[in-house]
Length: 81
Image (cartoon, rainbow, N blue to C red; front, side):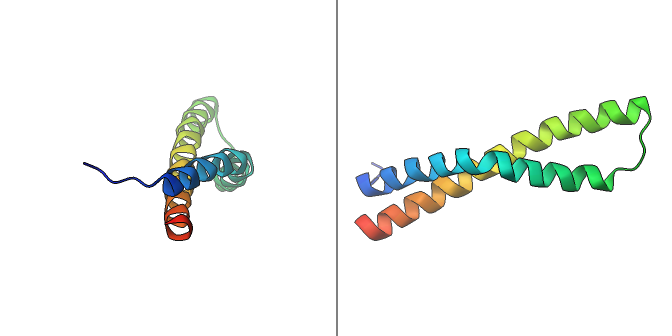
């Protein structure tokens, strides 16, 4: 059976809430950097860029939630036992 502590789970929930709050500024920062690397674009390149940004947002969200929830669980476990 998996041993999950209540303090760790509370920390993971708090970490997920923080991840939700940090998502918007983080995705704006990453998207701005991504768009700055792209030069002038034709219609086809623009459509491809929009698809890539769509996937980029999902990757940022996934990474954001996994990292913050993991760190939250770890801190909750370390502090609360």
